[in-house]
Image: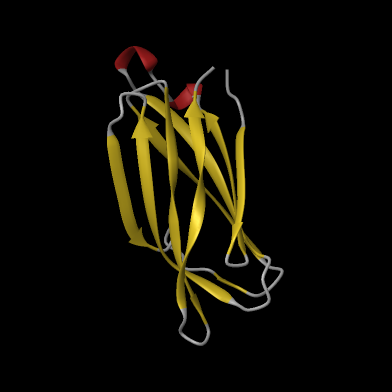
Length: 128
C-alpha cells in the first residue's frame, strides 16, 4: 500500500513542495529494499528570476544512517524560473529500512549573480 506524504516551504521567494510515495512494485522488503518515488515542485513566488544550480540532499534511514547527495542541477537540468513559473520533476530513493527522511537545499542564482540556498523541507519516506 502506498501513502502520499506532503511537505511545502517558502524561502527566498522560492516554494518547494514534495510528495513521496512508497513503491511496492519496485521494492522487495524481504531483501531490505524499499523504494520510494517522490515528486518535487519548485515555484518562483518571488519577484525576480532564479536558476537552480545544484542540490544537496540529506537522507536518513530508520537506523540513523545518513547519506548526503550533492551534484549539479536536478535530473540533468538547471531550470531558470521567471516569477510565477514552476518546475516539477520526479525521482526515487531506495532505503534499506521501512522509513526514512529526506531534506536539504537547492543552490539558486539570480540574474545579477547573487547566489542563495533554498531549503528543501524534510519529508518522510515510509511504507504503510
